[in-house]
Length: 210
Image: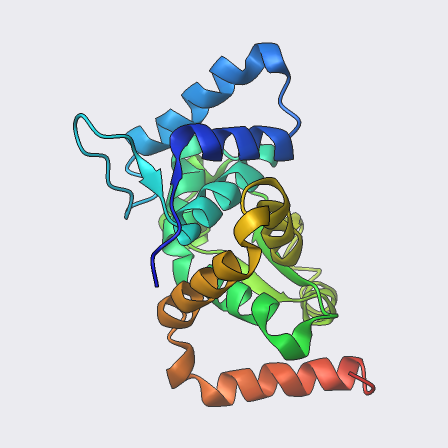
């Protein structure tokens, strides 16, 4: 199967539409995207001299994630670091979102909203995000409300749907298939049978008719 790819212009156009960037602010938006590249993000992106940069489905997804963090006010360095360090968990979220048995279940990604992260001691800093179905997220928040005073969330399921609508509408099934191949590999899904069984059991407990 030939890998789907997009140019920087195509990716920027889709992401700017998703975030409703004003036409006269597109140049500034492009500069922010290129700044992530200067930070080495996404890490697998290859830019060869004299040839346009191209993005595969997982790289587009990672750029979309880092912009969600930017919308929360997370600085570019921390946003890039968090997304890289959370790749396996993000892949789990994508794998859950693309599971045919979870079609009616929204998968969410959460992180502690620490704007002072760069001033905190190492053991108190965020090192990754968490992905889970909505029911599990609400249970987690309820059980840890005394420890987690600030939390930010975005929908992995919604983000994937937006990427299909704004970037990959003509190749939706192929985009989802290739994103799913990455998610299976990056999440080591084939080695986590008990983990996925527990997730499915929790979803059934939340919705017995699912």
